[in-house]
Image (cartoon, rainbow, N blue to C red; front, top):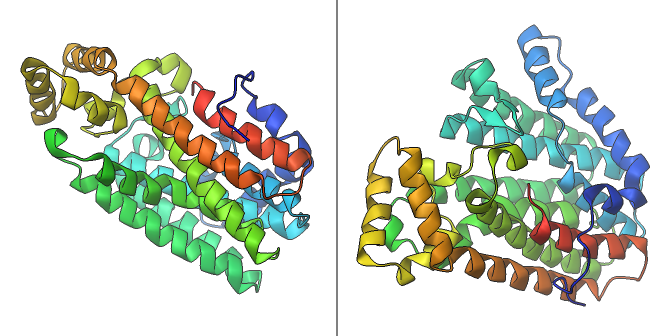
Amino acid sequence: MKATSPLAPATLASIQLPIRAELDAVFGELGRIVRSDFPMVEDVSAHLLRMKGKLFRPTLLLLAARAVDRLSPVKVTLAATVELIHIATLVHDDSVDHSALRRGQPTINAIFSHQVAVIMGDYLYSRAIVELVNLDDPEPLRVMSRVTTEMTVGEMRELEAYDALDYSEDAYTALIRAKTASLMSGACEVGATDADPALRAVLRRYGTHLGMAFQITDDVLDYTESERTTGKPSGLDLKEHKITLPLIAALPRMTPAERERVAALMRTPEPEDDAIADVIESVSLRGGVEAARGRAAEYADRAAEELEALPAGRARDALADCLVYAVARRS
């Protein structure tokens, strides 16, 4: 099975068809779990729920559960807790990065304050953990406890990525494996914690490879797509001095003058749009975007190989389509 075969990219809506009813129930569970009698928490929660995302991680969990014939109402609750943990990381990320927009909407720190954003992220984490404990099943709790630790380490790794001219692909790989791939891997594994251990391991590995492909593609989009498409300003990673694979891959092929422009941009607290555009052009010209896309495709193909161990059916087909979606999407 190859994820990069020349197929028309699947839409997320079509991928979600096999678990549409369960996914619709996830949103209700999110509202139930975050409900509070404290007005500010209710106000912030309401804003977050209005910013309803694509529910990609709950989709992975529910498809994994269906693929191993373990879909149940409990998995809907687990899917909601995974989404809460994801939202919590976004709230914290936006606060750390001082981002004003998320999915084209104002962030919590932009509307309220950075203090509220940090505390609200903590609240979402804690509500997710309480819900996991209440399920009285140690396995999902064990997986998600490991995942949240890995994600936190990933955030710390990102703070170390400060030398653009000496940041390796190995360091970048370790960062995105912890920060992004760990949660997608955890979502897939939690969908199958009550299944055959071999299939559970297959889905964990599938989720890791998918997460790597997804994040690399996300980093490519910052170099190739407009704010209208992605919901965030283009070149935002460079503006925030984030070093991602397109830049890492392009740097060895750049001229000394191009490398100096990159170094100068990274030294500038608030880079000008023209400086960002110049670096984006150099990264594309020197093959950084193409190289990163190739690496994402390699991870997607590894994930596709894992799927061959799952029973054939709509859920496995949808998980395969998730790979095409991950590397072909534009937002």
